[in-house]
Image 1 (cartoon, rainbow, N blue to C red):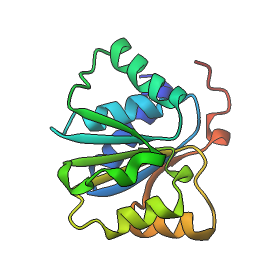
Image 2 (image 1 turned 30 degrees about the horizontal axis):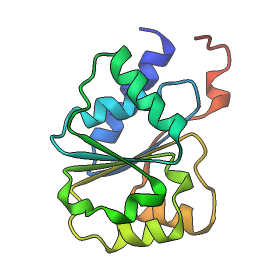
Image 3 (image 1 turned 180 degrees about the vertical axis):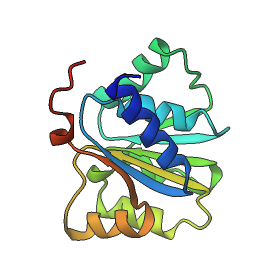
Image 4 (image 1 turned 90 degrees about the vertical axis):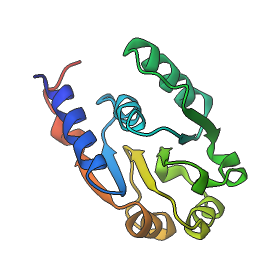
Amino acid sequence: MDFRQNVQDEAYFALMSQRAASGDIAMRLGKTLIGLRVASNFTTVIVSYPNKSILKSWITDSKEFNINIEHITFTTHRSLHKHKLENYECVIIDEIDQLSLANWEHIASTKNINHIKGLSGTMPLRGYKQRYISNICPIVYTKKLDETIGYTS
């Protein structure tokens, strides 16, 4: 098994081991594929993303790896507050470090979020974002860029 596959498997199992969990994973290691694998375990999923290029990577990876995404609702971070998160079995936040204070307040005020999973490669080290991540969706897996030295895709 190659390094990238090993990281993806480790991150997937770490995220699935807890109801609320985040992964801090360096770029080029397959965060989107990890998210797709997590989403495959649930019947209703909402994925929040910051921009169109992130959405495009979810769609591209779903096709490349033949992963069904018909059960996933996609929404931008900006529109996340328009959704009743308790209506989804799993909430996945791609680039969780980019959520606004208003979105964190929306998440914090939602009762009974079944599963919440966060993905990022640049987790905040301080401030309200770090506090919300620690309290609501704690980091359970980390693979930093300096740990990938010598890795080639």
